Image 1 (cartoon, rainbow, N blue to C red):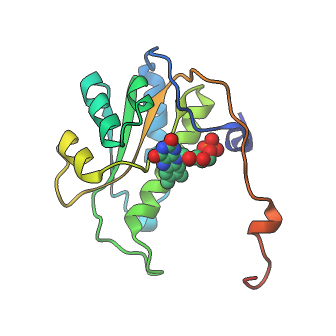
Image 2 (image 1 turned 90 degrees about the horizontal axis):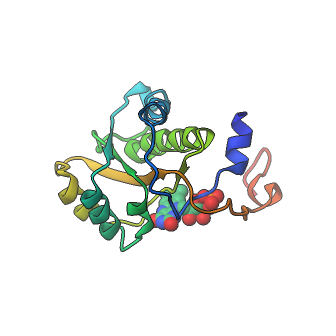
Amino acid sequence: MEVFTAISQRCSIRAYKSTDVEEDKLKKVLEAGRLSPSASNRQDWKFIVVRNKETRKKLAKAAFGQSFIAEAPIVIVACETEPKAMLACGQAAHTVDVSIAFAYMILQAYELGLGTCWIGAFSEDEAKKILNVPNNIRVVGMTPLGYPNQPSSRKFRKSLNQIVCYEKYE
Ligand SMILES: Cc1cc2nc3c(=O)[nH]c(=O)nc-3n(C[C@H](O)[C@H](O)[C@H](O)COP(=O)(O)O)c2cc1C
């Protein structure tokens, strides 16, 4: 599959089959995160793979009741291990680095026929409690990982004209 095919056809999946995810597919998704770029190649991240059903249900509750999260056989939770690091441009490195890694993982999952849905609406405090994440570590996002139980949905996006300008900000 070409990268652009994955980019253009992937969509967020909010219904999952209970079918288990093969270990080699999970490994490939995790590898995509491992190989992704980070500022100064710091790789200050940790990905928690949750298969335990009760824990998945608790995570869905921490995500304000988004119950589809627990439908998938796996939930991956992305953490940043050096959250104080800043980029010279003033952005928090943890948000940028972990987001890139998660985006790579999500695209790799799509190529393998697996569904994902980036979850940003969750209580970080709750997620930390559930997963024993130390106070000084940030939880940036999570995604269910499993076989989709819904058709692909259409993408609604702004046009290039609306989001691109040339030479100067317009
Ligand atoms: C940072 C971020 C946080 C998101 N949080 C949620 C969420 O909590 N729940 C959810 O159902 N979708 C969430 N999404 C998915 C977006 O709603 C979705 O990506 C967007 O509507 C575009 O649709 P598509 O992914 O199908 O192309 C999130 C996406 C991003 C990038």
